[in-house]
Amino acid sequence: ESFNLQYKTKNYDFGIPNNYKMIRECTVKLNTNGQNVTFKVYVDDIWKYSVTLNESSLARVLIPLPPGLKGNNFQFEFIGTGLTNEVIIEPPVTVKLKPMRMI
Image (tube, rainbow, N blue to C red; front, side):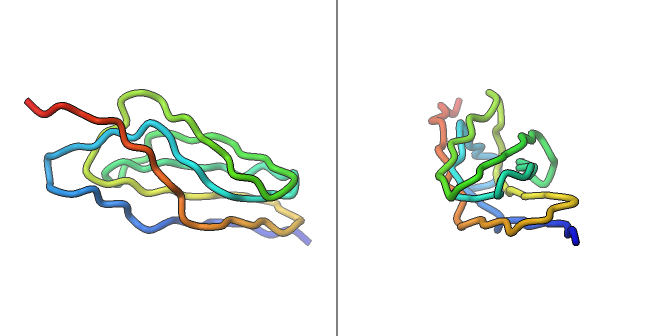
């Protein structure tokens, strides 16, 4: 029997409004048991990027992000459909910020 997965992380708020932060990469520890799970990135509540993850053992996965993902807050979501095996996601998602010079 198959099942669906939808897990959204907490909202990562990096400070003062209009003092934007840019993220370069995320790291997540997970095991999808060889099944595809979509990792989605939201910036200021708007979906901006997604990538498919597939790991057959518990691993720390580095997810490089496209340039220009900047905003006040970030949130991450894991989505899987038609899954037949257990999926393990170990929070938190860690984020590496890119320094930005404010004018």
